[in-house]
Length: 170
Image (cartoon, rainbow, N blue to C red):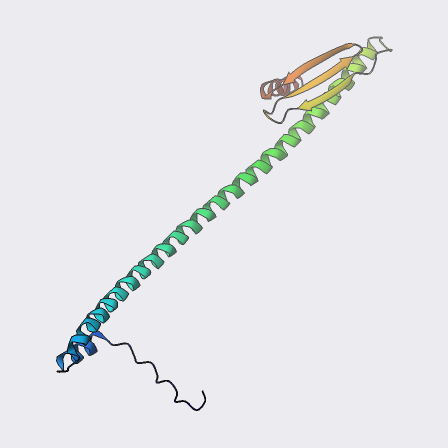
């Protein structure tokens, strides 16, 4: 293989103008070149159309990506805002429940002290349990004194009412 002649370099593609020049010169192979020149011109035109279509598709893709990036950024910002508000609300609820627990314990101590002052020294301990239902934000307070348990359902309204009563007594 090293002794053989190297392959001739590939010929450059024939342009439509070069094909037309070949057709204008008289030749015996003119009949053979006419279909080739027509095919070359058709392929060049097809290539131009495909390149234009490809450029259009690239532009459409860039526009789509830009719109998608904008939507993603908007959704991330909205989620961040919602998360921030949720954390703020959660902190407020924790604080409210802590205040409610403190208030209930204080009231329990006051009731126990009042009963002792009235001469009921053998007053059993009052046991208070709080339970929060996470689904609707309501809760229950269970206070049991001997065998007489009492259950009070808490809602936003009842908490507001008890807060108003406390404010009025102060």
